[in-house]
Length: 253
Image (cartoon, rainbow, N blue to C red; front, side, top):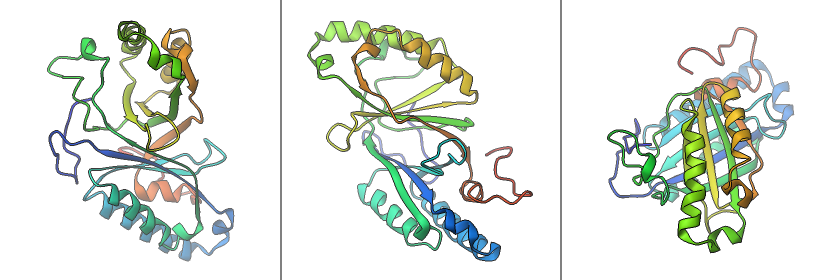
């Protein structure tokens, strides 16, 4: 994961980023509104999200039909914590946002990794992870994670050895890209990890193989897990009550 510009966010070398995973659920009664009113509300909220994409890094995902407790996820990255609060307030202030609840919400930050220098790719300094650079994979697999306290009491060399094994397993799945963010003291978990990939089966196999790693034995919690489908702001919202002709997921989404 190299540092790079987001389309609407100027890269600031050496600065850490705030990362927010916003999971929303729409009240089922919203679907009983007339189609014109729903379309107007979708257009309003999609426009708002697209305007925020001009100043922050924004990715939109549908979880509709993939989990029962959430319908969509807006992934926001910013250098300003005030942006995180402001965008959320504006979302809830729209006509469609008034129908939303937020069953899950995770706040984290970027941070340099202490374990993965050995596995840097050509021209890539994997200690430099202060900027997220999400790709355009079809799926994002998100989960919060917390280690048992005993993990932090292990000698540094022992933790490094365990992580070397963990990272080596991950390297055998080149179709899966990891985005690690840190929540110590900011939110309930210690990490929020987001994996990008086009094939859910690849991620399933990776997670199953990692269950046998030494570091996995020191995991306290790593749920809930969210499978999220990349789409546009409009596509994410139209998935809430898609008409048969609506192109919710398509090329480039």
